Image 1 (cartoon, one colour):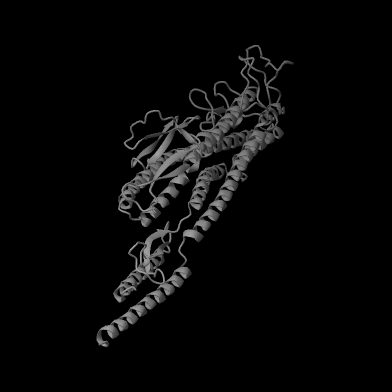
Image 2: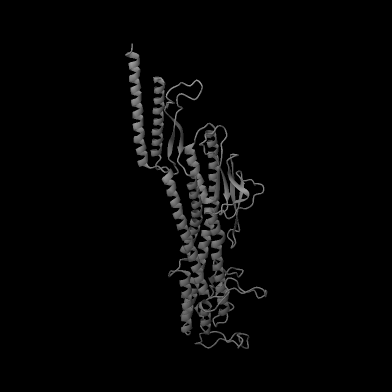
Length: 527
């Protein structure tokens, strides 16, 4: 039979265990609003029964329970849900960065509005139509110059504004690369501390939470695979171990060689290094590679591509989406200038001494950023009548070698200039190279149709990015809600547990009181 003093020892453990449960409940309640906190609970197990198994065991009706033991304080976490949160966070990070980049692009393009490039191009075309209809009025030439300048200024504004956003993307790539490295440093430091605590049989629940929160943030930036490595020493069977974090591609496949960002076994970590080439050009390039934490090279490492996440989204926007739009604008501005100038030279207002209508830089190259109207021109240099040509379209010259203007009232020159914008077809994206017979001519379209197509494509891409952002955001929210339902703190549940533990503590205290009465009877009232 168990002595009364053993029963007191049993109730002492009951009071201590219940107090631990109350303490843990209070910890949960205190951190109900703490980001990344996972609720904890005390694992209760029965103490060793009496008598133990053996040849000298006391004989009786059977084993008698000897109370309760707090086996461990564990956090409530579901690894599968964590994986879902990180995968969806990675996708959402990628599409959100693209959506933001396209949103800024749409704000700059500013279509359809009365101040966008499409409206300005329509105004330019209308001024040429007015010139054709008022061939005897010199004032309309001034309007053509003004409207042409408005088109050029709009090209300049859009190109320069897109360039500024692209430069901002450049900086964001650098900053987010540093952020990845910062997270890797912190996770490695937590691995080191967790290893020390687990080696002594402890469960570092709060450190686990901090490490998982950092891992979630890291997963939003790049796609990762997390592997647990057991700690040394004498860890508890419930210990979660150290994290080895490897960067993987968008399909979850490892790079060759493996891109290990955090090595849990060696308690070391590496860094990412982003090298941006061709900044400010039409073909920028970003090389992302793995290096040691001191920025020295790792043997055999190849550039990392297609790792999804926010960093990949920024890289794609910087190296693909923005350069493609800028190139299209450059092609359009160049085509407008070259074709308009070619027709302008066949109008009565052209003066070789003053130069062409549209100009570019000093070398003669025209793009969206530098296109402008020749400041030497005045309204009298823009005339509706054309120059006399032969049946083959060649200019007819007078005896002095000068072109012969058609009579006043002719509007062929203004009409031809207007046709450059809205009627004539050009291979804008891939002009034919006459010196290369194998060079095919790309699809031809009018400048106006090309602009509409470009604006439409930007809108489609932006809408697609928005849709994927919304979809991935919905899936991320659903995964986070599942995690919250498992790991989050419910104050109602914790208060219910508190009442339960309070009654358990009171009941255990009552047993102690009863045992005290028994001892008083045994000692003071017998004999």
